[in-house]
Length: 436
Image (cartoon, rainbow, N blue to C red):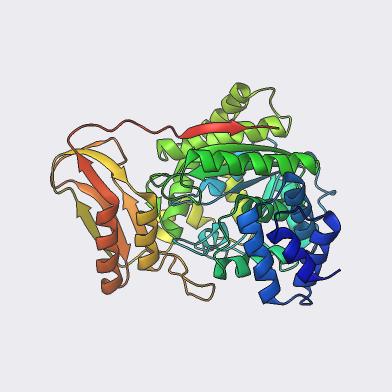
């Protein structure tokens, strides 16, 4: 089998067989196929698309390129959750302990962020002492004892995906639905969970800007999961404005803790209850979404979810004082400046993508994998889209450690916001649910 023939076949619009896809994935992962040939095939796939069968074969080939996590020693149904990413998306920090407190087993492997803020692991590492590097035995023991664990992805988990994504990122072949779906699902399958919940974002701060594209991606991933024997459900949620009020690593941890204590932002709590209810149904802990939601509301009210989060942090070396007193024990920026309303009216828009860029400018995220990250900086919103505001009132506060970065971030943040005389039509928080 020759790589040249695979490139030619795909360039001409013909589907690749399982053997051909396995040949490509194995050859590129082991270094036998050079970047220029892999790039040529990716570009052919980008223009000619992939069939559902090809996408499923690619997903499994990438999942099988490294270690498949064996979670057979975890008691009960294991449910994993994945978000396609957004601005202020601290859902995992709330959702995992919330559903774990209701008896769902949540073994979660998370990566570091590359973009406007850190990933889930970076956010958790703003808690002093927190360790994301767990042995497989520690990981399994924590899931059995607490109901959850969140650990960093190992190099052995879907290495083909890491290598191919880096190539896609430099060859303008990232935004292809089949390639995105295979990338996400290969990691979820390799992570070993029985069932998968996907939070597919849509809007200015999401990878997929339109509901239609988000729906196509969701359907593709649900179908892949179903075809490989992992029941998968996708919820399409809004990311046109940031989720919650805080954007930035330690700021998001603080907001997640507040939500677990029952006084977080309404949109964050609502989304976590919706996603969590689906996870309870997948784990067979509730008969339907309504019952699952009621169970989770009770777990928030009686502090079970908050106590589960605290146990999880302690089990992974984190300082419990950062959970009980985040104001004094989480990293804090030295300075702050507020963006104030220049006229009276209604907040018409807060473009999530621009807010994300502002936090990246402050140093809350990484422009490259080697970039240092400032866990203390970020943005807090004081208003959301649709809320009334008077001239001179605060729209947002920027927390910073570098004056020049703050000035640049302020200019970006101001462009993200518009004020109108009429109240805008509200966007739904959840647009659609895709099931098998």
